[in-house]
Length: 132
Ligand SMILES: [Zn+2]
Image (cartoon, rainbow, N blue to C red; front, side, top):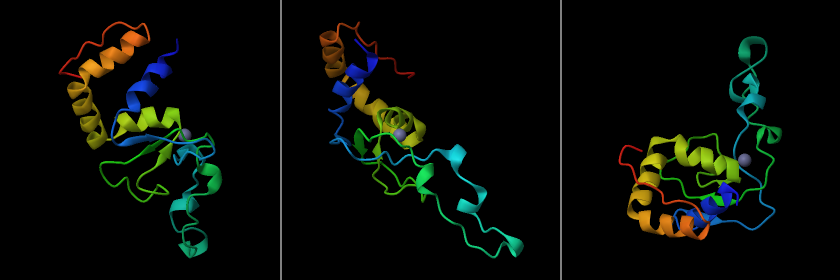
């Protein structure tokens, strides 16, 4: 069984995560495709205002989760509470300090639930480590 399957079963219990129906795009930005002019004044004398992040710079996978972020994620998101594909969800759960603290607090409190889910998936017990 793929590792992703037990992650899905765990994430669905996190109160700030909601599963999305198919057909919604991921809000994450692929930064390597963002141009200088998208973010800063550009051209002769820097007279042109920033173009803004272009549609092609957004991830083109379907969103799997809606995330209510703990803190403002800054101006580079379509919404503060973003829709993310599976891969971007994993990245963002660990990306910011506030998200990491919330995730690890939840894991500490729900250690038994996580192990029940892992047991159903035939996985060994998750050893809680306070240094995580
Ligand atoms: Zn994505």
